[in-house]
Length: 197
Image 1 (cartoon, helix red, strand yellow):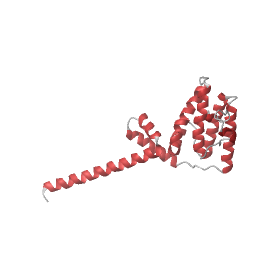
Image 2: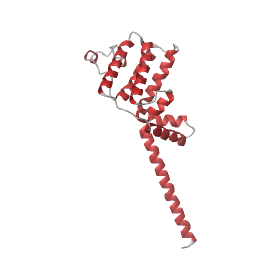
Image 3: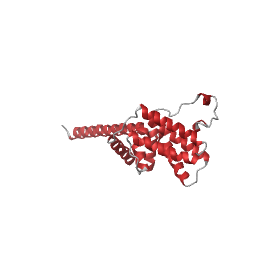
Image 4: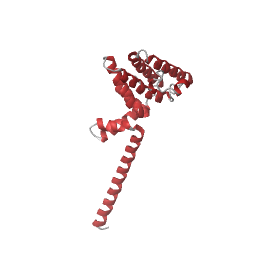
């Protein structure tokens, strides 16, 4: 074989290797985007590079795989749905307290499903693997809850917090916690369901 042929073969092998690496990288990126949805973009924005963000998301997947997650028993699901319905009814008379109760109820549900409930950032990281599409709601609700604890949240913000908590709550529960009551189906201004206003 001539030196030119050897160089050409080496170049072809290098090009094929580069294409294979690029294809693998693209496939991994696509899988992460698909799994994490908006959380992927958020991680990229928060990290120094896309590579660092993807490394962080893969680490979240690894930690998530170590959890022992349990589906809710029908009795637990019914109990949580009833608790949520009571919470929504109480909102009318005491919105500030209800937001705190919503935060506690969501935290109990997170714990019962098997997720850690320590630091909020750890909760977000663990939840992001299976519940990434509702984490924006959880972040917004938590921010309003913190402002509420300082006395800085308006009643409309408190209502929005409950709506945001409900999105994650329903995602964790696997169903809407409270169906529309017959009297609410024709009454869009009903105060029993804070999410319908």
